[in-house]
Structures are given as structure tokens and as C-alpha cells.
Amino acid sequence: MIKIAFFDVDGTLIKLGTKELSDKTEKALTKLRQNNVLLCMATGRSYPTIPHFQGIDFDVLLTFNGSYVKSGEKIIFKNPLHNEDKNQIIQNLKNMKRAIAISNENFIVTNGTDEDLAQYFAIGNETMIISDDFDKLSQNDIYQIMCAGRKEEYEKILQGTKNAQVAAWWDKAVDIIPANGGKGNAVNAVLKYYGFSKEEAIAFGDGQNDIEMLEAVGTGVAMGNAKYEVKERADVVCKSVEEDGVYYYCLENKLITEI
Image (tube, rainbow, N blue to C red):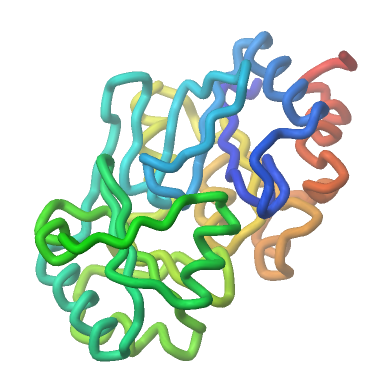
């Protein structure tokens, strides 16, 4: 029996670049909650920029690719970047002449912009705030650093770090998080908090940063629009987000009934 469901946001619950749930996806979430299934939003987005869907209350918010997790007002798990790694990455990116975004539970700011970083923010319908206080703000705990970056640049971006990793959901930009972070570890923390077994959990995702999450639950569902490597690591593939994959999977597998 499924007791908790984890959902990536962009490309899973909503189409990339949009803000609202489809009618069928909204109905699926509503019915799951009525069936006493806990809902967990599991996103790479920063905590200050998580979307809010009218009529849908998530029991758990798993943000920054798992580095900051809340159940109601209680913080279940938090895992900021190590200070040495944070400072090294920022310096690496400055050497690369790359615009940098940093975020924690209170803010998300950048020290500038470029085409790919601007598009990264636009995909999530997020407002880019360029701050003159970037260097000062960077001395706070930072859960995630975002920047433009291709796969061949990952090593250069992380050069000199010991406990950092890239969690990418798009091939033109990166989310940099602690090496012991990621959605999979956060899912494990949530299951432990609630006393649920792996088999009592299901997860839906489409990006590479969702793979660990899909493997941390009893049933990992890749969206039809997911990349090949995500589908290969999932237990099952459903319809795409454009085809209301979450709704039809839940309906066909009797997690919900026709509404």
C-alpha cells in the first residue's frame, strides 16, 4: 500500500516553462491526498521559489535537490555546502567569467547574468535578482549554487572541491549541491521521519537529478518525456507530462479512481 508519493515539479507535475497544473494532474493529487497518501514536492528549485498550486497542499517540501526538507514548519533535513567547497566553486566560476546564482532558505540572488542562466530562471518562471551584496550574502549557509554549464565543464567547475557534486536537470546549466546530498538521500530521511518502508513509497520524475529518488522508493516512475538514462533506471515509464502521465499512471494502477 502506497503511503507517500514524491513528485518532481518541472517536466513531471507541470510542463517546462508553465506555472499551473493541468486539470487531470490536479485531480490526481487531490484524490491521492483524499486516499491518505502523503504528497511530497521533490524539486531542484530553491525553497524561496517553490511553486504554489491553488487547492493543493504538500505534506513535505524537498527542495534544493534534497538539501533542505520541511514537513509543515519542521525542518526534517538540511545539508548546506561546506564553506571551503562553496568558496572554491564561487572562485572557479569567477575565473571562468561565469554568472553565479546562490540560494538558501531565505534568498536566491546572482552576481550577474548570461543567456543560459537567464533561461534557467525563465524555465522555472523565477525572477532573477542581481545583488550588489552577492559576496556578503555568499558568506551565509548556501544550499545550492547555480550557473550555466555543460557536461564537459563539470570537472572545471568543481576543481579543488572535496564534498560537492553536480545535479543537472538541463544540459545547459547546473545545480551544485553537497556530495552527500541529492534527492535520494532526502527521500531516505523523509521515509525514516515518517516510519515508512521503501515499498510504501512511489516517486515520479523526468530529469537526471531524479534518478536517485526513483531508486530510493519501491516504485520509481519515469515520465514519458524523461531522458533515456532516467527511463533505464526507473521501474516503469508512464505517459509524458503533456499527456497527464501522473494522472493516468495513478488511475491505471488503482492509486486513485476515476473522478
